Length: 138
Image 1 (tube, rainbow, N blue to C red):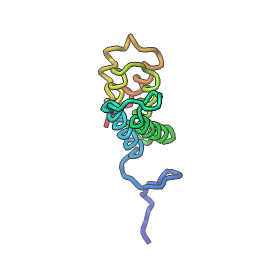
Image 2: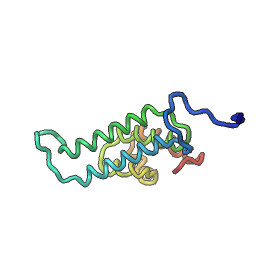
Image 3: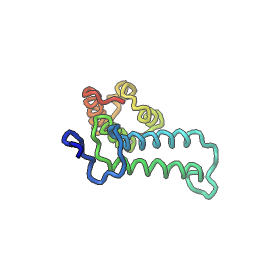
Image 4: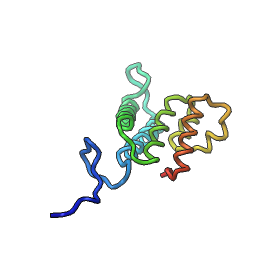
């Protein structure tokens, strides 16, 4: 019989196997950035008086589902926690430039604008800096 004493147990509720820490969070983040890119490229106009075209609505559904996945996930690496913080931040900031910086995970962009940010935003970015100092940047 094999000895599994040095094996790592899967998290409770795990349904897939991965050797990459936070693979589910990273994959969800990739879907978010892809959805935002598709929305930016979309030229279709809304057809029913709504704010978004059917194509944009489809991408927002992808984005929303990925955000829920990130929300429900328990991160097991600094990178996973960092992504969770970026998702929180995207709901706090306003403006396309800030959103683009978030999607790039660009701390430098925010460092140049620190005084223009509110306390909650600055605290989130401080946590991201701390995580990166721990070796958490992907």
